[in-house]
Length: 361
Image (cartoon, rainbow, N blue to C red; front, side, top):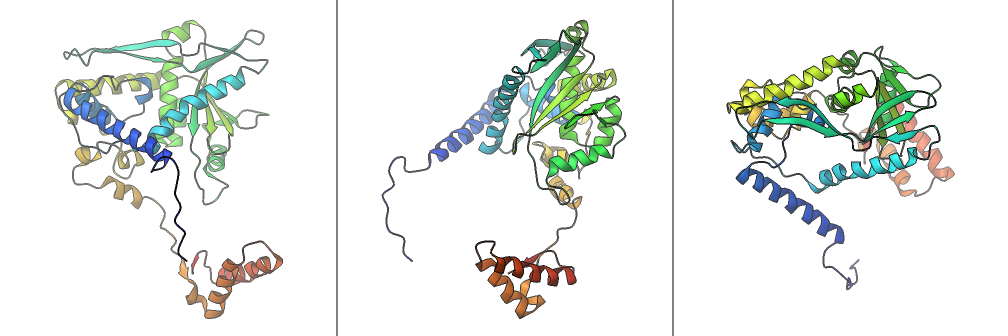
């Protein structure tokens, strides 16, 4: 049928398109500025603690104006996701301030960690950062440095979602234990061992960052002996705590990573910085510098090869015309009536009998 002509009032494009266009153009302008004048903000900061040494060297080369590497501008969705984290942090800390046993302290406390020396003045810097907050209880004598992280929850083949899948993974790991009588809170005694077992470079970066904070001279002087990451599920507002004992070994590893990347950029040779991940790793697949780092190797394709084989759907006709007709009738039923439920059961019997889990109409 021909849809009737409608005069749409207001902006000729979607108001959301105005924002998307603004964010996309903003990213392109920032990239052009970086290419022409170098960076304004040193890439060596606590939130970058989980990046590959070679990736940091590339960023420092651009920051110091020695090179520029072609890459895709940040898409609007990614920019919005990054911005959302600050709002979630504010929201969660506001809620904790209502908890009687908790005193929220040291919000946005500025910290210095260590100095990076270089013959290039632009590369010489102090590594510094600021905290989300600390929770304290004078009555009970505990104090914990916390960092709030929002987490995207994805589909899982065997569990309700990836949130529950990770909890089951923790249950089967010896390097992390559930805190007794807690809903979803865990404790890590040996941070290096846990991060090796976890084998998740993106999540590991959260621990590297907070470990720097809690081992700063400021918080050591204040007597903080543990820290905790608070994860917020953006899909359903579920919360998870992972508490851990600080590790000087992990602190030193991050310091050496930053200093080695600086040395490579100082002499203009990124190959002096280690490639800490290999093709097939998700970090290489989505790295902004993968084309220069791995040249003709397709790191995205290498990553996809590590994933389980995709189960392609069978064509419904291959299971017989009667099954195909029944499947058509099933999709035509728009509610969960008794007829649809009965038909669904018949279809599933045929699928199970043939070991088929996907069908294509």
